[in-house]
Image 1 (cartoon, one colour):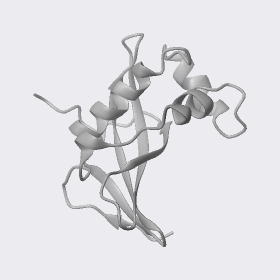
Image 2 (tube, one colour):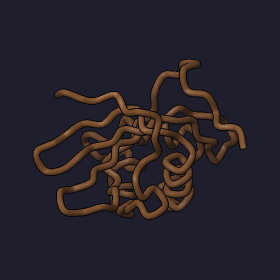
Image 3 (cartoon, one colour):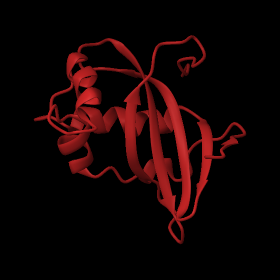
Image 4 (cartoon, one colour):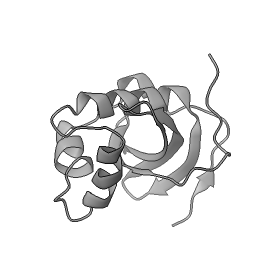
Length: 129
């Protein structure tokens, strides 16, 4: 899949992203989901709780506000954006995440697609306020 390196920029309309609750509870925090269970294993180990998905939603929202786009991937139905960054988890440990967001054709607000932990590398600095 071809992708474009993004110029330094934030996710468009990052303050209005849509994160469906079921993406968190039935996928990312589900240890029984066929493709989400490996992600859930890591997220649960870092203190996220499927019964308290707001904690994960909050860090995802913060991540797209703080970090710039890493990649832009044109799709036949819209544009996918990859945003990577470090989050502080409920058990106060840092975790590097890659998140994927889609802006469908004729829409402007990004919709959450997925997130997954990355091996820690020193290439993503923590933003300084």
